[in-house]
Image (cartoon, rainbow, N blue to C red; front, side, top):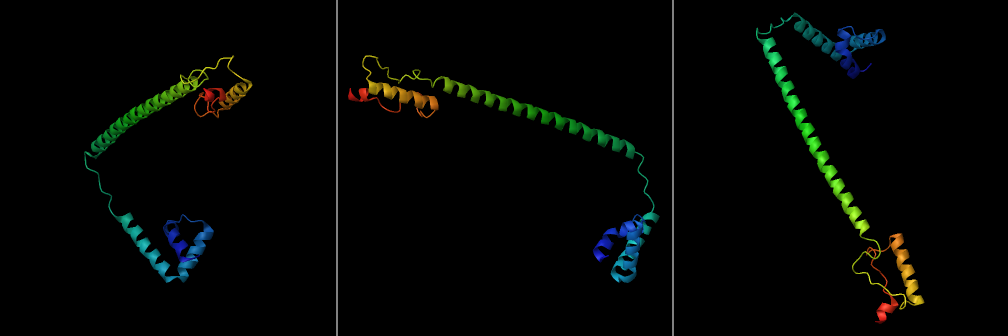
Length: 165
């Protein structure tokens, strides 16, 4: 055994709380190592002094003061728990409100992004639409259906027939 492991187990060794093999190894180390043996003697003397020292008697009102201190700390803990519950409840209400508002805003944005719902949409009459205009409409509808239309339903590509006017 080395000095560090012996010094870590020295108190347990002196109290005879160490298993048989370890006790023999510590005893052999103490026989060979002067520094650890001196440490063991000092610790043994300290334990003896603590054992022989008188135990102080508590004052007459010690039990009453102890009970009062425990009850007051318990009351303050109850107040802290109540405050924590109120804070948690307020946080949950705030989070729920923000989530509901975000969902409502998202729903409103999605319902207003349908084709034809935008006030800037330009209606096309069937009689002025050429085959080129039909291709434009198909392309515009495909872009809107796939979500590539960044203007939310307003045509990204200008119609050749509208450009000529």
